[in-house]
Length: 509
Image 1 (cartoon, rainbow, N blue to C red):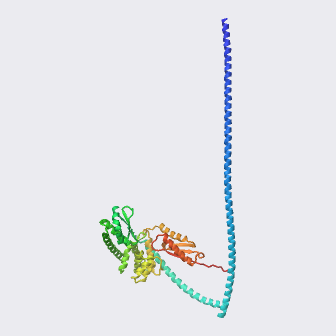
Image 2: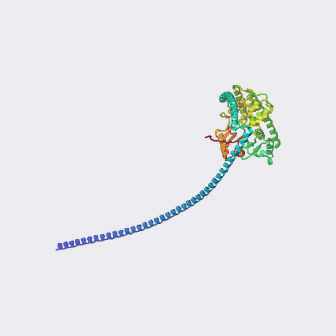
Image 3: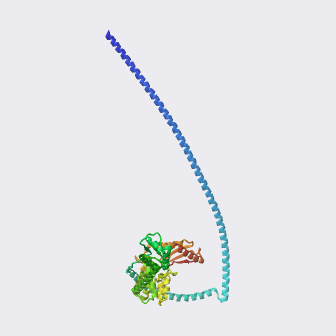
């Protein structure tokens, strides 16, 4: 009995457990279903929100795109309106220009008719004049033409024979000249070097306190020095140095020596300044005479007057593009003598002309004009030989060369100045100088071509004859000279030549 009860109880418990488990599974399943439904609703809500946001963004982008398209349309329309206005303006301008051209064409046509009338009148007058001449001469134009042709035939025969003789003489002279040029080139290869000195225009000071002593109380010392030497003493912020400025190299050298001695002596006052300047002047004058005598002795040129010796010595303090002019003159004299000996020219005259060819540079800052002409005028006072004077005046081509000595001196001068190391001026600076001259000439209206020649000492301008007349050519030369003087720095002077050429060309058909 008890076992049956236990079995029943066990069965009941089993059934109750199964029902409980079934109910629990049903509850869990229903809960999962609810959770899944809620999750689905949430996802649907999020999708709807995203769809709304996407729609809003699409609408906003469409609105922005529409605004950009409208702005671009307005800009394009504005640009088209502006172009339309410009086209209208150009069309009006072309219409006015067309009207002007029509009026001008009408005027030209009228003038052409007037010219034709004048030409017909001139031909009529010419025929009347020819008829009157035939009546006066008692012969026809054909007879007069025959007589004239006979005379011209005789003159042409004489001229032809004379030309043949001149050409034969010219060929001989040209052969001699070519031989001389070959000798000159050979001599150029053996030209000796010359050490170029430099002019000292800056004087060193032991200390900046010396500047105050040089100026003196109320500037009396600097005024006394400038008055005694004729040199400008420039005292600026340059440490330990003062600058001497003067066109005359001799006076600048006197001031340099006197100032150096005053600085060493230390006693600087007007009386001491005058004393030192006088001593320096005597020393420089003695040096000038010595250098002039040594140059004449070195080249074998004797009998020069003291005035020329002194001017020759002054060239020791003159430099041309870094080349000492006295050393250059001595070298030219020696080269000219050798070339004259090889070409059977006058050695004495060539050597003397070579030594004195640049003597005008000793005083060219005191006298206007090219140094070649100045030197020729100076030497003419004491030199009896016109060949020497002619060679000095013509060594830069400013005067025609008509003697062998003139060609020799010009060639020797070119050799001495152009050899490597002789002068400091570089090829680039030389080309810039020539280019600047041609640029200035070409900047004026009516200029067709321009050429810088004679190593930059002359500029030759070809003008258009239909734009510039003879008076205009003279004005153009004067204007170019003024602009060159204002724009460029150069030694000596530059010759400006304006050439106006008119050519008449016609064809026989």
